[in-house]
Length: 283
Image (cartoon, rainbow, N blue to C red; front, side, top):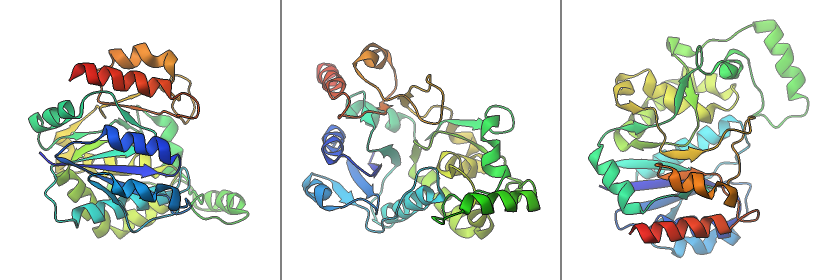
């Protein structure tokens, strides 16, 4: 079972290097999309690590914007065009970290062919606070002065929007582990549906729902598993999960998930040492 890890990164080369070493496996390749706003020089040496490749078509990424989706689709394209026969793709951020030995992840995916492990909730009933993301026009992807004023004006003039093709919107977290067949379907649907692309350009935080929504509204809905294989602590509320530290060591140790996010070695690197030690004893 060949696995492609895709990492969206924008900072902290040393933390990213640590993640790359932790993902090493004979049947895994690692692709890095480095934000185009980020200087590539401090990261260049990472290409010397085994099985590591940099995505060539880089995008300037701004939080909550369509550009994150564009960066992900550019990366999908390069991985699909690589000619390598991957069975699964695992989407990570540079602040994620594995909680278990990589062989366990490979065994698990091998035993679950064709699945899509993604966190998804129905906007209409389970995640209603996300509804404004698609009901209103958002101009946050345009780096223009006064774009909020323009946005407000357009929303007053045009009223509520609805998803193209009567799609049911679902989502929650952008990070997932899905079969390459699902990646291929999402990529092709996106490319062949200009109406959806135009719609998504004017939404907020589309990276957290577009991939799930495309699959949910297709024949692949049946392979979706409501588990993204990640330990993420949303208990603080707000739009970002908690940064995990030593105080989370017990919860991470008890977790059955394969990855956790998010970590920041400038705040607490010891927690990653604890995780590494635990993985070694599991071997």
